[in-house]
Image (cartoon, rainbow, N blue to C red; front, side, top):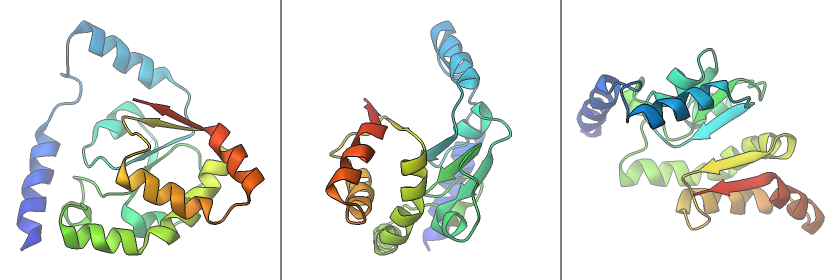
Length: 159
């Protein structure tokens, strides 16, 4: 029963044009973003925007693909809440979120290597975001006080 709404959301997101957003200022910002040198992107967004910006990046959709694949940590997009290209991967319902949170420690363990090896910029999130705090909390449980300080210095929040 959940699949129908996920399919409709996916269709809607797939029909949205990413290059038509905003005016000239937005287009300049998009071009600068395309030119940015980034190792990878982690997102909870379902849309296909990042794939259009970072052409050629390998995309990992959902926790299963991230957990049971062998990402290189460079040139990759991690879509941890699913993607419009795979409607049933979308984390949307309470049941989806419960399942996601139950597996959060595994996701945090996988992301820990990314966070330790690369600076991480959070765009559009804050430290009060439930998903971010849950992941950071799971990661912090694996670290000592000194390592937590080092990790804290690698995390940048842009709101």
